[in-house]
Image (cartoon, rainbow, N blue to C red; front, side, top):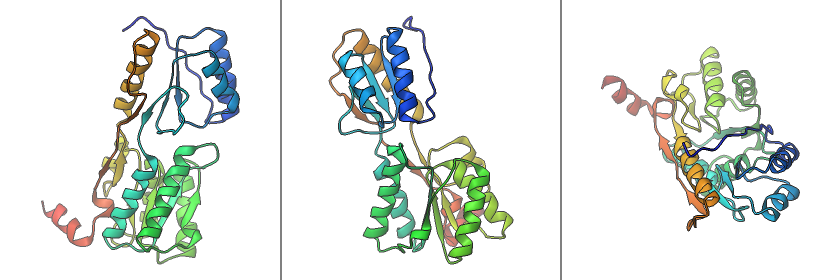
Length: 256
């Protein structure tokens, strides 16, 4: 709409790969750069700052942004989901995340979970925490491992809706009732979450709004306008659904 063309690069969240892409973009004299996440090599940060390229990082709230950032607190989101489960009476809450290497978002989510586990006196068994691919089958395999080692687990928080869906499908294959035997919560607020049976409790991230705000800020900086708020917290929302309902709540929802 403003007459710009878009160049896309996929680094697979590998900082060195991102560095190569940023160098190639700068060689093409791009007007601005939009980066997912806040984990970058020192060279990437230096290139963008030395060239004074308008840059926006999204999905996190870095303490030292390269230029601008639009996101939400991954720590707070994970803490609040774990708190919600604790307040519903779940005491043995497991966590499935994607890999934390070079991914500050997953690091922060795991930290938020651990803080809530500590604050609410939940079971701290290290076997409750696992890192795995964002994949349905991987989630199913990991759930089998989890219930094999800790059959008394009563809740599972997954930092991705696809992981949660894979865990839910496997629970159903194993005859584990959700949420009666095992509550499951996801993260992202994808369309699949509301179409599962039971529907999936999740953290809704305002993805479109984050992208729109980041794009506007970036274009304003390119146009030479002053962006007063360089770091914008867009927040999150916990959507409570049937996958974490207590039996009484589930009966009321079914009756209605």
